[in-house]
Image (spheres, rainbow, N blue to C red):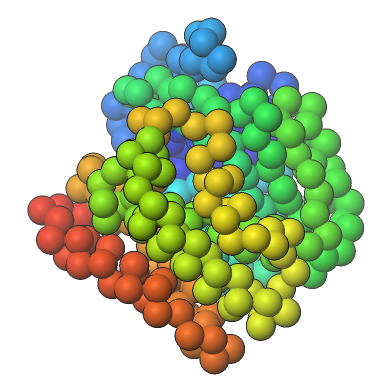
Length: 315
């Protein structure tokens, strides 16, 4: 497959490297020139399970030099760059291109479909992760981390099955879901549990999970989100709000920081509008009150308003 990874930060590089090692033609797209230059000059340095390796893979700052349409465009930018990212990807989106988002939160597929046509878009969620440690250097967290993909209408299409096989053959644990919207909400619940609370308190997980009042607030936020989902007719696999709180930290070190906190520490705005904000918007649509998520959203937006600078490019 010819694959373009738009937003090749830590996770995009980790997934792209596995796919390249499996024999696919992969291009990593990232606007950070130092990151791109390091990959092209020295290869992508990956530390995984304590072992380091170098993967030779092509990187670029845009899609303009692409010679042929991609079979897959994988979107992994921060949520607020989704439209900009798919507009950037226009040169590689052809008639048969699959467009897949593995971003945090909700609402990306609608944005992608507005640009490419909804028929090109499939949905997904991943529990895989990574940390960017320097230009062209990452720590990959893929072992035992599931990725789910599926058609938004729940159908079992040939293209989704084909993509799942490609991911699996690359060593990426991938499941085809006939309830991908429910799967996306399951992941949203995990993000709701710790996202804003970590950002507001500035606490890594070890300290965050040591404060009982924080756990109470997290469970209240997840409970609201579950009520919104159920009223919307969405089938969840998570049935106990505390399960989302516990799942958020499973297998992670005490010094791990939620992505919202990492964004604030970089001086960037967060994805809160696509996580807690998504709960608040859907709650208003189905007449389910969301006071806890509304408060968390307001607090993070207030912190963002005081940032000295804003994120201005696709990572």
